[in-house]
Image (cartoon, rainbow over all chains, first blue to last red; front, side):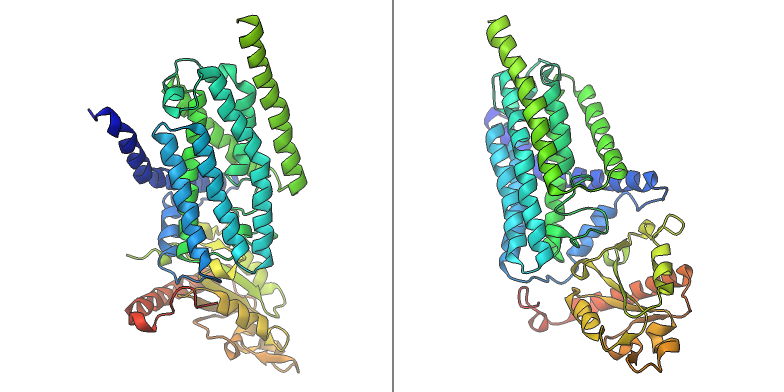
Length: 293
Length: 155
């Protein structure tokens, strides 16, 4: 058995090594299921790995060299956020690193001169503003139920968190659509081929830099689905089933809705955070403080 | 080991095509032919693309755009000229504004014949281009490091 002080480090290293593999497979399944929903055969399951392999075979075409730094920082901080999460770290620190990594992506897009890249960066910022309150409420909700911000304690809690936080969970699923860059909220960049702003934030990233951004997305998938797991942490089987159902729903929503404007994105994300999230936490607070003191 | 041939992303540019070939290019992406089976994605961004599909003849108005789009693509890259107009100017070659085939402006690797070119012929042309793409990648890697374009200096 691994000694206690090293356990967190080992967990972080396992995450750093396995998350890109798992994330790439999720992306492959996503593309396959999407193709089937559109009546197509779709690419091979390992297609995302081929794509990223290709990116590293291409010339590193950049507009300014700072793009290299920002793309790498996006990847590093995304990996750090996930590693902190899976090693049982502080939720608030995880959210901080997670947000910081996206700020690097926005800065990278602003570093280039293309108007498409700039509009993409602006929309990415709006998306961050839109989903951030709900992500924070998720962490606060888990604290109210388990009395801890540490993922290590939350995951060991025998309380079925989902029963206390149904509103927060639905709110989290809605911001998950923004985070997974799925329609109707795929404003800043889309995994679908064509978009009105070419490729948004990733327009001016080519070759290896685009590969790094893609790997960061894989880390992000695993982290975001890890948060879904926390809601059902008392029973791993239900948790895995919940993750699969949640992801399938995301793909279904992606393929049945069209892209909305940024105002609508901001309004709907804040509306769910303000109603489902806040009311859920309010009721929880009332029950804890007033009904069962 | 090469991933390039497993994930060729295309960008499609309509020079001055009559739209006949363009419809056939897009037909290749529909569920009937579904070229995503081979990892082919139709991207609108030259910086993400590996294969440049051009339809129609080049004229005085779009020669700059064609050249610019080509220059923005990262190496290694290939150009596929689709249809008779892209090859030679076709029936428009005598027009006062038409320069002729797109090889007048950018180097072409594969010519796909037809008016309009059939989707099967276009897919065949792209598959042929993948062989050339792989050869170009090897040539790029074999080049001495000193003559390679350093990252950040290319536009």
